[in-house]
Length: 439
Image (cartoon, rainbow, N blue to C red; front, top):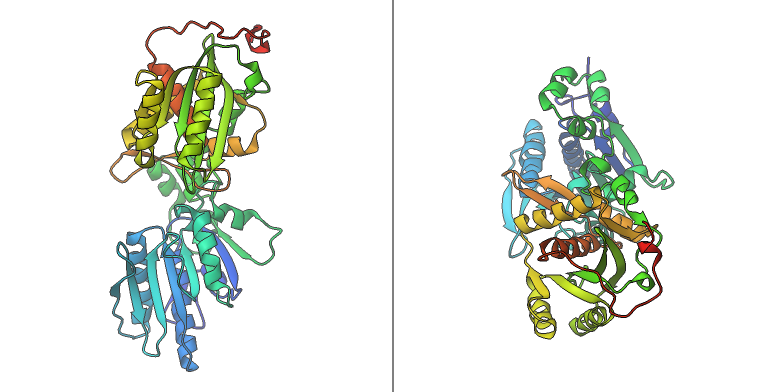
């Protein structure tokens, strides 16, 4: 039999929800199974905090940042509004402009307390001095960038509430839940088994059979960190093509090379990836990764690559900022050697599939033990949109935004589209590489 909270005898909460609600820690993070009431309980805490402050003649300020506009509306209408109405309080949810592209939802209580709900991004995370609720934080795009923008908002003694189901290891939510050396955070976990044991009316066997997806069940209901299930390139796949001789330009034999260029000018990396074809294997000869360099510097780096290698095909990301670099490269090296690739859902799928096939067939070699490279390759994930269209996403951090992965995929794409068989002959004969000796 469940018990209701002493603060509100009209609302029935299960023990795991009561534990979360009654934890008054300044920083708390909760990992809950799907549809177990994490948003419902946290919005109740927000309402209770506002009512408590107003009973003392004070005002409370809360901001809810959700993964998208629909989720922000749900948190406000199915959470905040319903709780206030349960207390017998009339509630009007106002839609107000936040900026030119985003609307905020707001509720203002009689005593002046205000609750605002917004879709999460680095811009909406700024500009407030308030308590903050991050709803489904593991699914926020660029969660680390949001985190950096957000933390000054609550620095003046405000509370921070973070809840989510897991979404792999490449996000800030994973760090918050697993960094047990950080004692500032109070952590709560309620998987489907805990919730049902505490009284949540769910048929576990029926749910699991109906879902019919073991990976989804483990992540959404058993709260497992399934990075390998969602990563486009698993660590096992990355491990299988690492080699200590890859990535050393001194091992270049003078053979035909294919180059991929991922354009970045501000936050993303600018990456040039050079592979040489040796038999049926594409050996990484050089990876150039730079951040915040000018177009002139990018051109100079590409010139060096064309000077140092016999480049058969160079594929460059032509999307957005890439228009002029592609035009300039075609002028310098010729349209037959330079191809611009405009990134779209369909072209990304072709690039990523070509790249993954090379990994699976062991037809590519990459440097061994490069942590930043491994992380950047591994963070690329394939997800399915509500319309069924596949999309590729990657969390942005100091290691990159999967920029190295796209540069490699562009190089391999260029090799797969090159006409005819490439015959390897040395332009400047060097000492024989270990790569050609039976590997």
